[in-house]
Image (cartoon, rainbow, N blue to C red):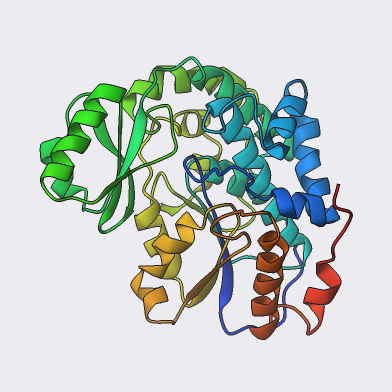
Length: 351
């Protein structure tokens, strides 16, 4: 099993492969549990994260695998480590197949997973970053996030000191974030004015200034790490552009991410401007898949998007089928040899 990004080339393919990694809000009860139980390779990768996490990992794992968790999944202490583990393990699995992506793009915590796969962090370093982040944010103010089908400019009348635009996911898809009551008031006004809104699964005001004091407490720990420039093309959801070596090695760049606004839409624009791509979402819920499908490059079928997990976990039986479907697409487009899907995916025990 490779522990660093592969340097070998892939056979000629019509379009490059890029990986998308979702973040806070994409967590679901039962996400990837079927794959963990059926796919030994994926299970081994997730267990590497749990082992690196150390004390507390067993409780997170046990809650994830049970139908009666002791701590709600939306709690930052549950959602963040699980999302990182699943995103990283899915991405690492794709790299271990021999795929060399032309781009990695993560949303929120997904950017840490993408950066780890591109070599900015080792796995142990990334887990230490995530563990430190969870500790600081757990004591941060409560609040939430609200998805709104509108442009960032249209949101101006609904913003104030406690409610800001926390993410721009597309031309008409933004996330508002803020403390509980002010966000609820903005939601009431938006709905009254005819906007389509949906609450995201978050109990903190991620990507708002309210989280900045807690987020910046991570600077000392990050400053102690030997941060590196990306070895695979890494697109940042915080700059909306390819990540530079200067950004990747700046501790404050990483520390501020829980409080800084996400520019996933502009970053996806930059990624898709490089040519026709097969986008592969490596994480739960298919939220980034839905956003990508609205992009003109995908809507026109010049580019395409597929997901390694189903939109809803169900009983877990669809997890392995989703992985097989992506493998079939990679074979069809010439990224893998014919028959690779049978060799690379197999059912293990169902513990």
